[in-house]
Image (cartoon, rainbow, N blue to C red):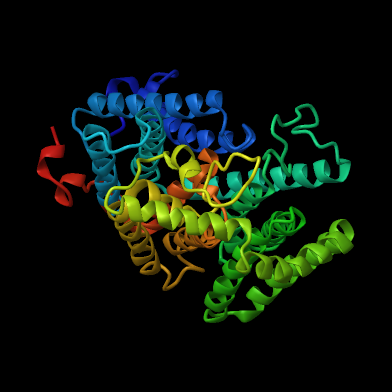
Length: 455
């Protein structure tokens, strides 16, 4: 709780009441620190290198220490609940069992992956504790909309220049299909799948008027067009699912003219950019979707990896081979020849099944069910309710990754995974913005979890 100043100081011309208290400054540091860290990851090539992973884990630990200090400063520990905490704790327990009983194929890799997942968990926990006010939601809406627009614009410019280098200065050591700050264009598409719904949903709410609606729709259009121009077929399919869901929800609400205006602006900008920048190359890429699908079904590389992954699962069906252990174990089960190192399953569901077994997979299903179960309850009046709009934008982003994960491994990329889990957490938040905010602030986690949490 904020520290109140004494009444005697109120009359001073330099009253401390006009200055932010140490507690409020800590709250601001936590809030901007968490979301600033989420924005850092994509800029650091997706957070896949050792130095960027170290920064992610270290900053997350420092932010958690600051939150702990903030609680001690207030005189009591107040922890706000979230239904996702339960499957997260069960997943952590399964990871501890893997390490304690030596059930992992590569202990060091499992321990390292566990630290990374701890960082994800800390960020989700801090989001629940720090994201409490409607003004913060507005700040994040603007911040992530501008952030996504700038990254998309950078990616389009970089693609036109065709330098084949990250930021025009760095050549990837192992090659790749560069797009934006990512070596892999599919992972760039995954980032945009999560960011595009933010300005797009905002443009359809009652909070967007005039120039704000136009700017939000244009930002979303630039971000969406970059998904198609990146050439990611999985990204195109995932975004199509997102748009279909949003169209159904928007069509059921009042004032269809508002929806039509925003949709019209969005489509005009998207089509214009695609024709101007993509043209024939994009058409060839989209036409290849059918041929590529036939090749895969006839025995393509991804299907071969999927089959091999299922064989791996049959050997350790309960607790798997250990978190992060897929690339270490896979060569023993590979059924095709290649000079390339297969570092992921190209299917996040199968990789989780292999690494964490049936118990870990069931925990994931629990996690996803909690996200959609809580999120859909807030969608009744999303165009006029901040809680519903935030939940819808978050769930659309989550849905995009869940669809894309059938054919790729976005959740093995730290920057994308961290943002995904935070969006899941936002979707599952209790209604706390607007009229419910004051009530929520006084509700401790101990009422919904265990009384032992409060010290």
